Length: 484
Image 1 (cartoon, helix red, strand yellow):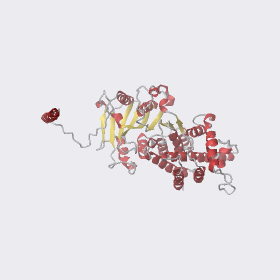
Image 2 (image 1 turned 45 degrees about the vertical axis):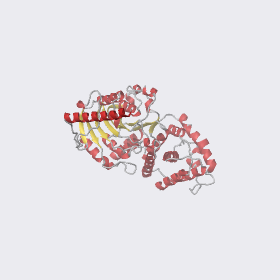
Image 3 (image 1 turned 135 degrees about the vertical axis):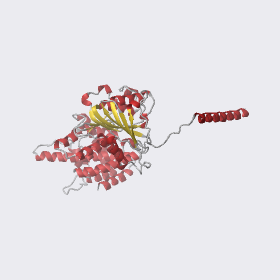
């Protein structure tokens, strides 16, 4: 049912002049899904209050509730076509009344972690791009048929929503920055091993893939007590996201995974001065794939002791500072971080090696991130003690990765298994920190087990090659002079 509904919605959006890419499709589906979810949440709360003989105060005023403007029902439980808005009336109500009303919650909310504040944030950041009120009516009718009250329904819908996010990543136009391959996230989570009661943080959360997969991992780890379930809901997952669309998608993705009021804040993480981070702010676990290739403004760089325009390098400093002593991290970064010879890169590697135990590096093949075209590594580190030994693993799935042939869980199974004991293999090896160059702190991936032997030439061979090159140069110069 869900899959067909999503397909029908996309078919309608395809006809819309205001919606041209998969990013637009996901954005427009997201705000409507959110309002449908909110309606269900309010109904459940009202029912619980009635059972306890208490009065429930609705978050939304009556004219702005889903069953009032979007899907008013008759006594037979079916859509009341006489009351349901459509055409220009529906479009004008959404644009001129509904969105301004919902955006106003940001000012009226008690604080940023309330659902009221999130309503205000979402509807201040995105716009309704469905210009035809008739198309909007068709989409609303499809969404009204969806039910995601039970965990089973939420689970099924979350899978479909994840595929929308993946398609968005494949669609280009910066869509890739919202999507980290889920098999890679699951492998990172398995290595870092978050525990119930720990605070898990992603300061560049995109579509909240790391937080959602961590939630699934912890939920499946044991039979949860009521207190543990509440801890997962309220005090475990924390995210920050700068971009409006990604923020909306992160909220919706976490809700569909079963986290009712996500602790995700819409902010530029890097605008926070590192010196202002206190013990109470620090976390146990960081899982992240910060954006790379971006350039931050000079005033943002002032917030960091190691100044650089490279966004990912600023995030790495932020993550190191945000970890508690003994805290653990798994962070994706461009592989050039390991060998760049500029001062910022060398200083950052020094900081990482001296303040943290960089115990493992996963070297990923090209094509892991579809559309990104860059090679990346995953850094696994623990804060509080310097690095003694670094274990490297060079992932080679034995095929070219791409849109039609993406990374899967089986590709990463050997890495996860070998990492536990930091075992050597044809694809893995260890480097003693004492052998790392103390000037450059170069961490380049150089597999000593690759079987490729470097052939060293004898001095006479080198001299003969120099003589041959000199003779060739003299010949070329002679020809040039002959023409002058």
